[in-house]
Image (cartoon, rainbow, N blue to C red; front, side, top):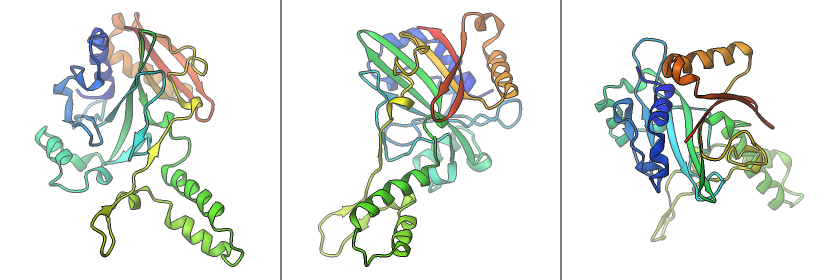
Length: 273
């Protein structure tokens, strides 16, 4: 069976390695659970798909390493809780598609994938490591975030009274999709081509490594964080984790509830390094 829970179990089982590695990509991730592994291409890791059973698998994982208790910037991809694999695998000739297919996945059989971020920070010889669902950072939809950001630019720069609100509205709508900025643009007579990249930085209230904001995330701990919106969902999360970890190992894991100021409650499974 493959799932993000099995992936986290492998991190727990091998957690002593976190003290030995200088970069997250050096961690001995369980290759038997993965359908792809990349560097500099989203996703860094992907879990294999299950064809049947309790877990769907297929989760996407991005690595975020920092030398302080901040989450490093997101380059080119806006953090979200789910992504459509067709928007990531743009071509069946691409490296991500080939890796997934070679691993035995029917790539498009699970189009919408949950996204997790494995974030690590350091301070004074200590570490905090969190495998966290992307919805922790997605308090508004990505297209709305892009659109509202460029709407601010439009309002700030287009102050000429002759430019009416209808024209501004069309500009804001045209600039509301992240994908249009990733395209390569060629200008006549220019010796270079250009494309724009989106750089996303996490605010303090969404920095799970921030001790003031999230004091329950302790130094030298490994954490798994996922959202829940009802007692039933919380119970299902605990049941899924227990099924994978086993009751004996669960006795060594602390279960916490943390409140995101902009995005509700998250259930955290925590163990020491």
